Image (tube, rainbow, N blue to C red; front, side):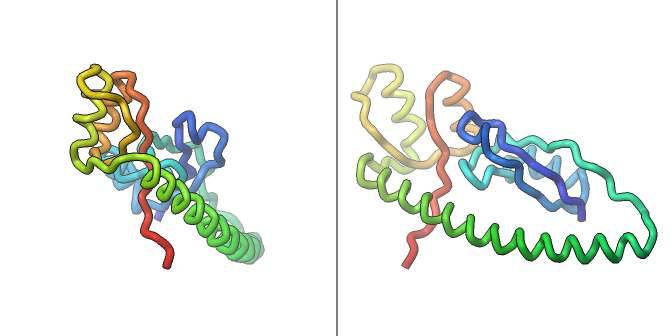
Length: 157
């Protein structure tokens, strides 16, 4: 397995830290990226880039033992922080979801066509939410239509 440092290149996430992705090999990363399967954990965008990473070097056993102990400690701390941050992110996403549901109309699969109709002035502009493929959403953005892709997570019970 190969660990890559990844970064979202949307305006929304421009100040966010990079995140890790584990892949079987470089081909697996590239295939998943082409298919739009690699998305930002913050905003859901597929505008992800792989950052430069340092290669693993073959070193002495003693150094490896020390490095492994340090890494184990760091991983444990990272997991604790990731779980804490994940809970916070989940809470934020649930709050956003509730606000969107309260203040807009669900249009389902008609989202893309209704957004285009609003942009062209065929129908009155109003807040809506619905579904669109990554390709359709990107086409809207390419046409200068400002849309947001928000991860839609289940409600907390």
